[in-house]
Image 1 (cartoon, rainbow, N blue to C red):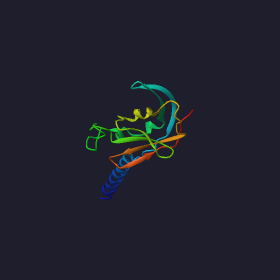
Image 2: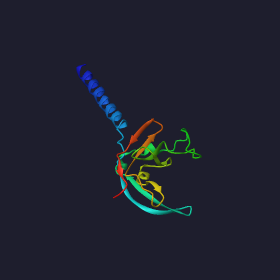
Image 3: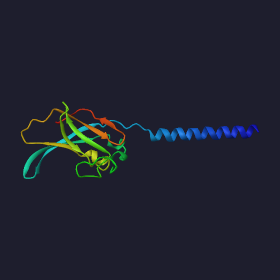
Image 4: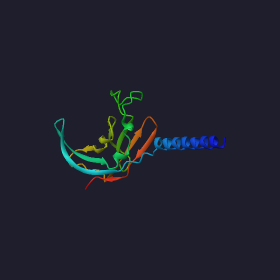
Length: 149
């Protein structure tokens, strides 16, 4: 009888450890994005030359792809009814929105964050992004990143 009780106790203990481990894996904290300036280039858009300021999220491999799943159950982005669960907005240091992305398909898209200005326009000294997880109603805010190398 004592052996059976000990075996049951060990079984319950093992199940508890497994459940706790599985639960901990499912609640892994998502880090705030680390934004880094990648450079700038002139681009031609609709016959007009603009300066594109390019950024990447350095820790994108730590951000789960699930954040960018198509989410037709959430409000659309314009006419895009299959926009991503998480939308990304680029802001200057004062909070003025410079650009937005609502169709990033996976974390690889975090290597192509940008905003554009007309040539000769003075860019903001610093920018940051916010990733807005619309499903979980969570916001992940990056660091301030310079707009020059």
